[in-house]
Length: 267
Ligand code: ACM
Image (tube, rainbow, N blue to C red; front, top):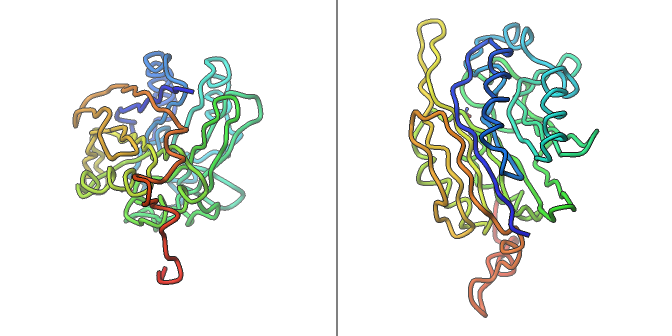
């Protein structure tokens, strides 16, 4: 089944969850034709936290009011939403992505495995590991990784080995090498990859981070299906055919999964 995937790019405002929720809701109107919508990392709170106390002031559980509201939207709109948020789970704080399926009570969370820079001071390392969600109504298998996880080829590979057709990557990218690497993650695993990056900048305690935009959707060939500008607030939509990722052969004799030699790999 052909599916439409959207990536939503905008500049969340730091420590202003109400405004960010309003922005997300208005951008979802633009994304209405899409089946699957991917939003940036920490989309509801902004990014540049300086301490655990700051995160604790804005974090909410997976069944907190913002995610409840967005899950109602997902059900009402018939869309599967994936977005980054600051998660409180008991006394733990995670940089997480919620997967909100268009079914009541169908909600999953991925907790960022590889924390980046000052996230290490503010969040606990994720404990969910990488997993794939199958949504039978559309026969699509979705894996999630968050931003800096891209630096570790094991992340995308683990998702692909679990059968992901599409990797959703909420991001707040502040460096540049991903432009070269992200399409390769798609090609080397023969999966689609939807990268939702944010724009704008945040200055905290005299240090400024500038987010790179250029959200994109990559085909399993590594080709760019669509790409946003560096500063646009925008929604991009591309069509994907999930079943095309499942045969990992690229000619009659060569198959990128069947030809693997894990006994010779050191991981
Ligand atoms: C990042 O992981 N937000 C760069």
